[in-house]
Figure 1 (cartoon, one colour):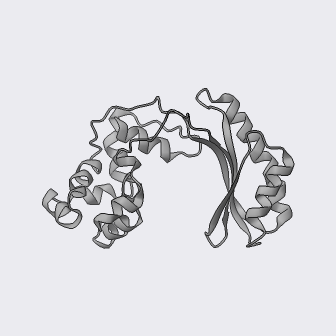
Figure 2 (figure 1 turned 60 degrees about the vertical axis):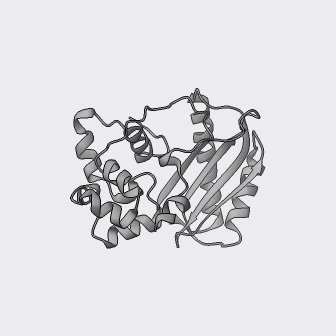
Figure 3 (figure 1 turned 90 degrees about the vertical axis):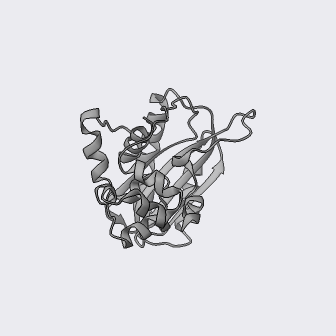
Length: 217
């Protein structure tokens, strides 16, 4: 089922490897925080929590009419999702859009030298993952992701399929220098060039932008 596949793949990012056995599926879903349900954005999650629903187990106690009262048509989907109900088949032939690695540090990287020291291990890990991945296409863009100690974040990217150390360093510098704050997380990655014959992607519920879901609120 697409529901379990999506939740499990997001549960253990960046590798996306997490197994949910059928016998454990119901208990696994019950423990999920409501903001882990795909299609639930920040506004919807905040509303659910303000109404006393912190987890899927909490949400299961709500009758369907109450969910519909507060969330309209999306209430029906919430009723199903908190019970792990999603009968759509898993579609696993979509091309990969990006590949990345990131690390959240136990102790913040306090200065530029500390950030620069951590850059090369991330790059090495990224290329190792690229070699192991059978479904990667041709890289089109290269990016660096930074999350600071105040939880602000930035992503800097450029069109480049195979960057050298100077380009990676430049991207990191462009992201770090304007704030010059301690860094909590660093990540590096590639975005893959879309095939020219793809004119658009059809979004399912779990891929719906948060702003569209939160329009119910």
